[in-house]
Length: 365
Image (cartoon, rainbow, N blue to C red):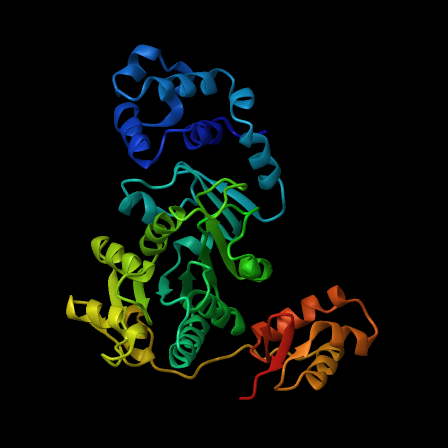
């Protein structure tokens, strides 16, 4: 069963119509959710919420399991290994959120190690369709920083986000992914295969119930969590109007250091970064510029030199620089395709191969 205090936070989290602003009003008026058990209609009416919202909250307090069907789904999710529910009263709830956000999440769903959320983090954001130089820079810098203990935090999106996550994993570093959907609706779906590795070496986080779909309005809210968790924000490549700039500007509002990689004025992907630099962001041209913010000294990049097992050696021999289909690999090795997934993912995270649709190509150093 859920602890009583956790259940009270979940009631405020799940009742329709109680968003961040009303949660803040409730906490300002009553101090904490502990008062829910004895909450009187007259006291709640002083908040001047819509009548239907007040009625739903009072009904949920009387019969939470009957009024809030999502509770059972949340309990089932929490019961799975390495799954955690963090409320603001939990000792591992990230202090950065309560100290920074006026609308901090009433519940965080965390798969992985919640302790990572308190570590020094660099938020890395940028275009979902970056150019090759931006992707290479993201990979190189994130590997360097992650190998020296900096947690790489991003939003699991295509482009710069997933490149940053993968780079951290490739050197056995820590990474935090903040999602704009629930754990049953991973977005984009293709990135679901990275969650287990991220949870083993960091954490995957969302403020949304497990069944929450990836609605457009969820992603700006996700950006505020990315910005608040991080000690500094690095924008690699961004258009003038993009979610990356929203994250950067939120970070500046929260007192975080904002850094941007400059680019050629004629290149559309550089316009957002150049605009940030014009508005006061720090111009960074080498990874040491970023490392200084974390008190790191110049040093060699220490990569994770994991030995290949026999199956991976066979796969590496079969995969060339032209796309090789998964079905071809399985047929050649006389096995089912799903028997190769774990080995292929490990090789991908090690930077040996890269997926292309249903095929793989070998990366040449």
